[in-house]
Image (tube, rainbow, N blue to C red; front, side, top):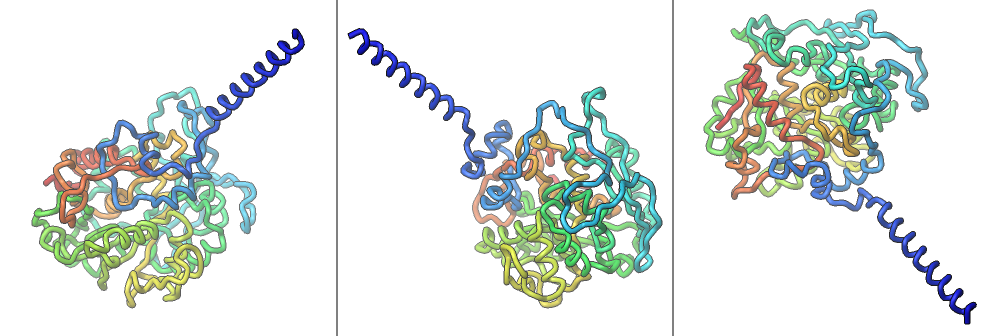
Length: 465
């Protein structure tokens, strides 16, 4: 009897211990991020921003699932190793010969078509840090950039480049950072440096062979400069005036079309539907910014509203925002008038997007140093301190507007978020009111604040409705 009681007691104890173990195991096993919908991603990290809008360049669910496996965690105090020197060697980079370290000193100048001089890198004035005694930068920040000295295109006495030093943005602004990349920027040294950074912020995930083959077609001064045809437009003007047009509902009924078209250059992005809305948004497009992902999403999402393809005209340039190799592959196909050779757009004909007249001289692609600089110095969101830091970037519209800030003398912005955004539908082409949404890959609260600050500083003129 005693032995039976002991056996029962021992068996019961074992069952209890097994139950406790299973319970603890289940509590400690995290959910797979690939199973969590985008809205859940958002609530995990942006609970206090639930009323903010999103743009048309959201990552689709498949892309978030693809990138979720590469997320890294970051201590809330940013207590990680400091940023290495810019040109330090990255081990195990495939197909690229190793090179010795180089310091941030000017190299011999290189010229092509009589345009510009290139230096290895530049590091701007350090930004204020909360803890001067500890590590100031986690390694993924990379606040060191290439520098390229191009001759000024105007002698505008009231241009942004001259006025910015007198504003609060003077310490953030780097005058000589290249906005777009071209074939001379691709070197083994730069590949080793930039392959450390994923997505739009570097060449991580792009194999060197694809990069070299694609960029070899961007080999003229037209590819090196954002405003490559200014000498043909200048007429009597000493200042370059640019209109940057977002797709916000604030433009509906604005009657700003003629004013927008009166600028020398007109920038648009993503689902830029023009037909039927010319009175409010204008009809010209000189620069169209997009990524392959946002282009495909726009064509799928806004086809019912009239968006069939990017704007097409003789003056239109197409500026890729490279999220990954999809963008380089589509750009190569467009430059060569061939079908996309592989990837998610395999066998797609780029001429259906950009027209029969597209050529390599009409194509540009943002420099990853420039996009990382915008993230680090203008839109440094708290999302960068979370496991979602690899998918966070400035929105496509934000990159477009800040690119204009770095290339034009005067910038007017239309259709961007203002503090009263709830009064307006998500897009100017919406037939009925649609509230705007918000997701983790952008920080629209910070972007809204930045537009207000730039407007107050006199660096942009923001249409406020």
